[in-house]
Length: 371
Image (cartoon, rainbow, N blue to C red; front, side, top):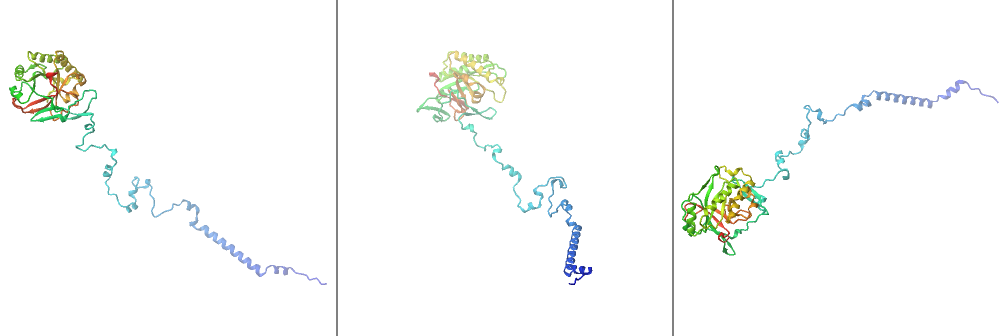
């Protein structure tokens, strides 16, 4: 058998076939293309990750922080344009403030509205001498005024009081030295039952006692006319001793006459001037008037305290006078006084027969001739 010998050139020519050559060319082209793409990508500034992380993103409507405003003031919603999209509130800020809830402001009563004290039944109205009104609490411990207003009848300046259809009241007037001559007979015929005659006064500055010029004659003529008589003294006493002196003056003036109506002390301030008693405390005024009352009672006569509502309720301690009759000086349609009283001076401008000019009239709710 014969052997065939292969040469080196023959083997190399067989390894590089056309197919292999084509594959190598494609591979080289793809590799080159990848390299070019990578180089181009690394050179583009839009894909620099470091710059992308630090560059602020700009918008068409940047938000301005308060510290970035030119004036340094903090801007509010009103400074932004988009708030103009909404309608403005026409309400005045002052009106808005005034429309706050009522509980935040004190509620003032309407004019004409009565205060609660006027209807609670526990207060009484006092009109002070300076004209100011004051509501005072009524004491539950003092005897109350039990006069029935519906039982009071007024006809031609003359008032009467009825109980069970029977008249139980008596009328009188007060007389002092300033009154002209009183015709007590005509006064009696006019419907008057008694007179309260002034004996004297104590000066509101000097403190000196002065007796009325005609008190003795008035006692005599009033008694002869059939009128009952009571006496009073206009006081400005500032000590118990002075008050006792005034009481003694009344007792001494009685003399031989029958005096069945009270011996009264007329207490109070002087209008439009300063009086001696202004300096006294409530307790001191109480002690002074009590000295008068004790002196009168010791002599066996009835005693009364004549004063207005303000003085009785504010200037003295009424609890110290439970055994003393009250002669109220309170002109008006009704006796506006919360406590017990026996006499009420209800007018000071009446016209009566026997009296020249105007006079006061007092109604007594008890018959002192039977006391």
